Image 1 (tube, rainbow, N blue to C red):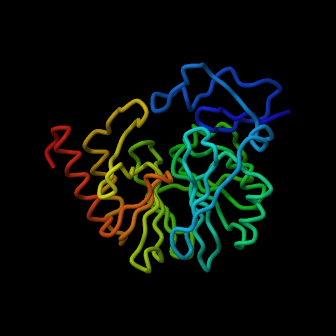
Image 2: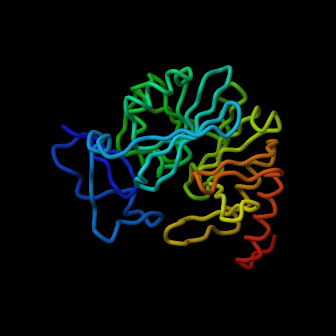
Image 3: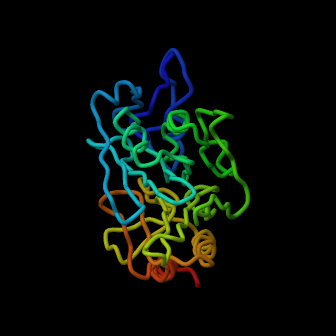
Length: 272
């Protein structure tokens, strides 16, 4: 039986004879069901119409994203360390060419994902590279294709992977919303890979924070303060977001997070 994929969010569901009646990820108020209604595809169909592209950002960091755009259209990041390579966030398309390229770069040691909108085909990636997928336990209820052999649910506020990589729970967009700190990034000054838990905006000197981006639902002040406090102990001079065209904040990315939070709190009328 096929594993159907929602075309709006890119989430792959457990195998079934027919497409699911609903996408729980899209029906949540943080996402949406498209104007044309719920639609589905499969990985096999997606491989016939789409391909993945790679981009090198700096030594040890590569982007991988799908063209033409699919689902939310995020791109993942591949971080290379002496501990092993980690895929940060996930995209729905996994094909033979992508497997070959990643294997030629040393394969994967792990996959880690910021929040449920990017779970996509995580089980396919885990099985192809024989690695675990790190997810925060606070978001376990949003997993729609469970796999006890593939998914590792970590708890608490931080989780060290190895190679100078640390998962940080920020919350905000989702209860388990996570960012990845890479101590070796930005020539050793540190880099923060944030998905859209901390969102790079059109002006790359700034970031923002939202409960729902497509529905423009803001986060309350305590949630924004929590995000800033979660990343404060870590040094980072560069920040990478979730999309090709809204990618990096540098230099002084840590200062940009603080300044952006101050601006956000003033805008919603909160005392800082």
